[in-house]
Amino acid sequence: MQRFASVALVDPRGWVLLQERDEHPVIDPGRWGFPGGGVEPGESFEQAAYRELAEETGVRLERGLEPVAVHTVFHAHSGSHDELRLFAAATGLGDEDIVCGEGRQMVFVDASLARAFDLTAGAALALPAFLDGPVYRRLLAR
Image 1 (cartoon, rainbow, N blue to C red):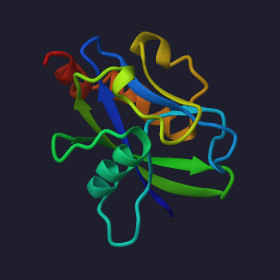
Image 2 (image 1 turned 90 degrees about the vertical axis):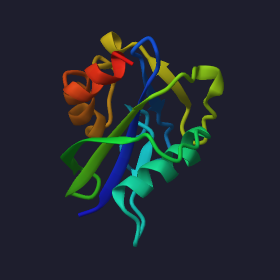
Image 3 (image 1 turned 120 degrees about the vertical axis):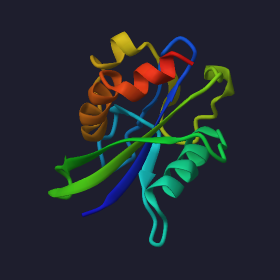
C-alpha cells in the first residue's frame, strides 16, 4: 500500500485548485486531480501535503491546512489499494499566483464544473465528497 497526500485550495469564489496531469506520470496520465503526491519515508501525511503543495504550485504554507478525509484508492497500474489523505485550506490566491511545477496546467476550477472533468482515481473519490462536505462549506464562509 502506498500513501498519498493531496491538497484542496479554495479561492474566494469557491473554485478549487486542480492540476491537469501530463502524459508522463504512471498514475492517471492526462487526468485532473488535486496537487499532491507520495508520502516519503519518515514523513507524515500532513508534512507531505505541505511539501507537495510547495513543489507543485510554488505555494508555501507553514500552517492552515486542515484534514478533510481519508480515502482508499485503487490504482490499476499497480493493482494496489492505496491510502489518500486530503487536506484543505482557503486562499486569496488566483491562477496568476500559482506556478505549475508539474503537469500541463494548475488552475482554479469552478466547483460546479469540476465533477465533470476526467478525474484521477483519487480525485474521483475525494472531490465530490469534499464539495458535498462540511469543510468546503466552512471554507466558503470565510
